[in-house]
Length: 156
Image 1 (cartoon, helix red, strand yellow):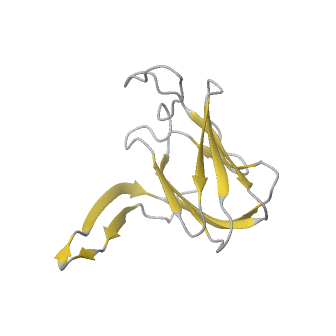
Image 2 (cartoon, rainbow, N blue to C red):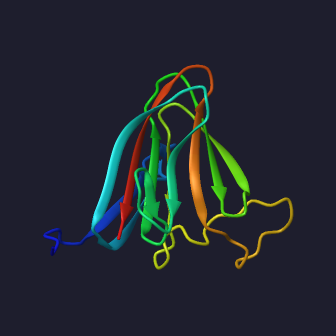
């Protein structure tokens, strides 16, 4: 079967707008990612128990994305009160965590030629440009009450 979906260029624009003492200190930056032909958008509830919200590997399965094709991930905390802890794990079982406060978004960009392969490292020692490993999953755990997260993933 031949697909009828045509790949498109995704455009992401980040804009900060602030004027201090009459001077504009805002900025706008745009990233274009070519050949996107798959998108995943979902709202999930993160509870106070840690759970995997995204997985990456070499085979596509329910909730698992091909690691070489993921170009862009955005996770937005839709809650107006509580934060959520996000934990990123690579193939070496290294982990790093981030606190995503109420109303905030996190963008994780894949490598534009290799997806989330070789893009994540966590170490107590120095990290060099050639020490990155494959991102394998992202988990979420709300701090005191469940929060809704909007997840957006774009793939080639």
